[in-house]
Length: 417
Image (cartoon, rainbow, N blue to C red; front, side, top):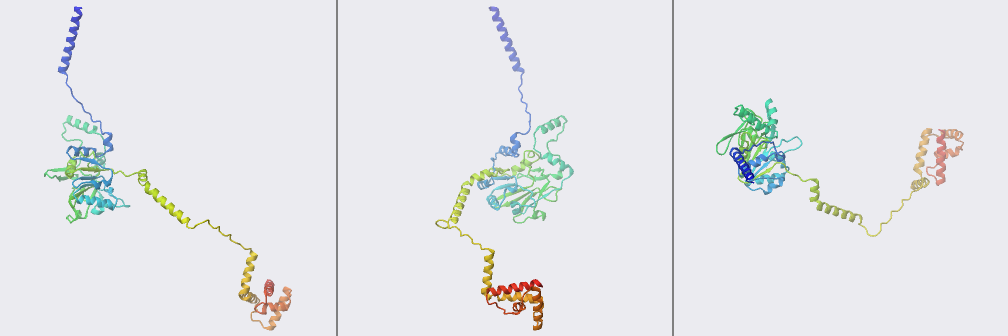
């Protein structure tokens, strides 16, 4: 028993010694690996800008409705992801009124096509044009502006340390002629790499002069003569900053050169509001919102239609049947009309004149008439006296029967011709 106690004691001392040695020589360390962008970073391209501004002490919030301009204060800063978000004159008036009260607006100019204009750019007399790119930038710009993770940068930095390379391989390798040098409020200079694919134009910049209402500042790129990358306007107590580079402050580029410092310089003292992707109501939301007005208008239209259709009292009188006469009745009615008009004198005279013209006896003498009656009597089988009375008789028949007989006689004579 005593021997077992000694063994247990020795085992406890050995475990204590091993633990003491482990704690003496054990060193804790943390290893961090950049696994690339998170889902939130891919969904929000301005996530790095938001965290940077929040780190500097500026309150940041995102908005999805352009109508939020009404709630902005005088010293707030608004970053518009596209100038096309101000899509009509009412929104433009609200925007300009807020700027004149002291607001700071940073707007990405949209390149307009031929089928529509841009209300804000037209109000500022600014147009967007294409810049001049060399072969290197045509290849490099899509790479520098592409969203991605941090593995490549970390690998390049580690490789640079091993090869004793002092340059940061994550910075774009562009010539100084593509960089814009700006001066901060403290007097320090910093460089910004604006994407020269799109540039801004204004008449005052072309003429190199400052006019009332024109730009008060613009950045330049040495090898770009077609336009400038950034223009700043002063309106009332506020300012509007226009730029054509839509990826300058997105997460993949805000860490390059002095891009983050430029954003901080443009921000005001108030809240920073980011409106990058406005949300427009869906068809279902619009239908739900205006359902009451829709059904009210439909009900009023239905009531007005019922009042229009029920404008009489009592039962509707059935429509009288339309009487239709036969062809015989129609001919009899026409004959009755002609007879009571002039006793068919005009009708008989016209028919008689036509037959006489065909006979060539319009002004025939008495011997010629007798000769013609003989020939017609032989051809038609009628008496010569009947033929003479029919052709040269009284112009007006005595009665309906006489008219009918004369018409029949003229038809028989005409048939022999």
